[in-house]
Structures are given as structure tokens and as C-alpha cells.
Image (cartoon, rainbow, N blue to C red; front, side):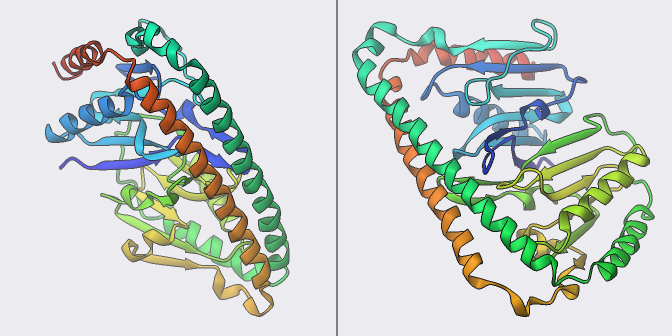
Length: 351
């Protein structure tokens, strides 16, 4: 049965826009289509239509959502066909590595009616400038929230019994890696890096539950800030690499150096910190059992949440400016030409 996985390959983070777009699809592909174009050019709609055709025909698909507009997608992978399509425009500019061989550029920019567009030059320049300012504000607020996060982390660490957490870690590493190999025919990245969560203009979005479908072993890793969840996940990654397993590593949407989930392909196993996965799991790894929360500084938590909210609010401003650009470009595009490109692409993929 076809299913849809939902992920992000970019994030609005404390480090600015953080790109993981080297992880779209691995080199063992039949084709990577890179769509170049403009706001309002129908890139996301085209990919969604192709995704629907794929799932209607029994092919599972991976939707790579846009962190600045989670209702749009930046890419789609149809794994069974070893095909991916991706939006190759800024901020995630993507160029072909093997042009004409297994990478192909689709240029929708040729369908812009330039004479019409020139009439809106001032409005476009203004919206672009405002857009840049909105993102600058958002990233500065996220950067400030990271500082508070680190303050909370340092405070909490002094209230954690790490000796007992280390013992629990060893027990679960043994348990997870003694389940036995379930998948032995996987073709793909040896180590793939993604986001399953993002801070967006619509708030915090968590698509981690979409990764659970078909996973035999599901662990929820519970623990407050500073209890060592990323350290645990890095230990899992280290063990998986030693055994030459394929893994997917899911990064934290605010601080990408921290981890939220790991999937071990051969073991059909996911370990995740996402609260959205808790009701679907079969085991809880609880680090809070060894954390004394009596000295929690609630004011720090409130400040952290407030700064994140301010960052999200700034992203809303970026969305408004992007909509201005989309509405302008929609008046200046030959959609008949774009529809012809879409139809040719569909025929090529599903012939």
C-alpha cells in the first residue's frame, strides 16, 4: 500500500536558513529533475500532481515540504522509481552534478512574460527587500532563543544523574541492536540527514508521525532539556555505523547540531524525541526518571518560548511579502507552456 512520508530538507533555525539539500536522493537514482522558476510558477503544484499520480498507482512518495510555507513542497521522491523532483531556486539553489545523465534542469523561467513583469519592477524590489528584513528578524529571534536554551541546558545538567542515564543507555543500545536484521535489500544513502520538524509561518510543524508507517520497533526518547538525548542518539548512530547499517538522522529544527530522531533502516527501528510519536510507540526510554525538576527556572522557559514565538511572527511577515511576489508573477506567466512541461514530465516518469 502506498504511503506518504513528510520531511523538510531546510529549516528556519538559530543558524539562519539551514540547508540539507544534499540529501534529496542518492547517486543510485534514475533521474533528479531540478525545476528552476519563479514565485507563483506552479512548481509545488506540479510536484503534488505527480505525487498524487504516483500514490494512485501504488508508489509510496516522500514529500519534502517548504519550511517557509509548509503547504507547499520543495521536492518529491518516488523511491520505487528512483526518481526525485526538486525546486532548485533560492534559498536552496541546486545545480546538477551529472547534467544530462542522471540530473536534468527544467527551466520554467522561460514562460515569464517579461514585458508585463517590467510594469511591476518597483513592487517586486520592495517585496524582496521586506522579505529579507523579515527573515533577518526571524533568525535573530531564533538565535536569541538558542542562548536561553543553552542557559536552561546548563542549569538542568547539574540536576541530572548521568551515571544512571549512562547505564540505561548501554541497556537500550544492547536491546535495540539485538533485535536482528529485518531489511537487507535497501538502496539509498548510507547516512542521510533531514528534518522532520520545522518552525514555519504557521507555527511549529512536526511530521515525525509520517515516518512511523511500517516501522516494527518504535522508541520514544523522553527527557527535559540537558538530560542527554542528543548524546544518546549519537551513541546509536555510532553503533549503527560500526555495524555498517544505513541510517537517517533527523536534526533539531532550532539548533541543527542537536538531534531529534534516528532511523536504523536494517533494524526497521526509529528512536524519536517527538512527543507526537509517543502514542504510537512500543517502548519509552525515560531520561526524566533521573532528572530532579525541583529547580527548574520557569522564567527561562517562558523567555525561550516568547523568543521562538517572536521568530515565528517575523516569518509570517516573510510570507506576506512572498504572497505579494506570487500574485505579481501570476499575472505575467504563460501557464499553458508550464502545463505542457508538466504533461511531458508526467509521461516521461510514468511511461
